[in-house]
Length: 246
Image (cartoon, rainbow, N blue to C red; front, side, top):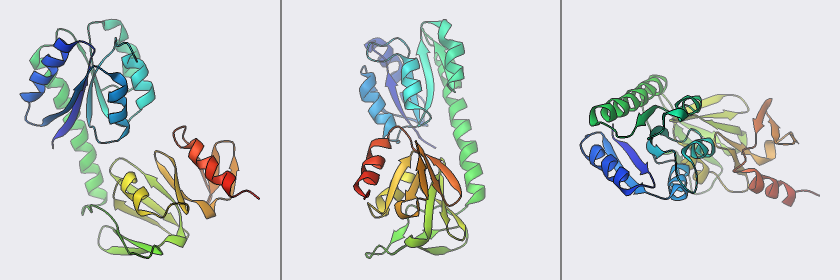
């Protein structure tokens, strides 16, 4: 398992140290080193980063503010000269907290901890769906899709889909009659489904627009399930709903 990392710090020397340490660890790959917290935030939001080495005292965003905005799209190791933030950072599910100057043995212990956590998650998902699939196979005419389940490739009619729920490494497709589990990521599934008929309303949910039963504030009722509308997706969702109002 190779962990894709970024290092975020407003001190170039601190970035040099992290980059040097990452280069010494075979299972780490430094994708980006940056002094710009906003640039780092954009990379994390894209969902392709496994681990962020994050300084706390930065001009655009503090490390704590960064964590509150970015959420759980990556794992985080804080790198700071200030110990007073440790308690607050652990409340935000930080993997580890490294005090500067950082010794290499302490750095290695922290990244090994993150790798072990991710390997356990992979093992759990593999036990549920042992045969991974890179992507669903869609026909040119978007009436149905094919997805790989545990023992077969299953055809799912788009008109039967109520909503799709995403976890870390797999998704559940809820239809009118069943739940289908497949190894997949939400971004790829979102790209596969026809726009306008399906819309992502939360980092963990894609819904079928015509299966919506009601909307109350930022909660959607569909197939007996209450689905929240996330802040990131709220404007696009309600714009689509408004376009269909009589």
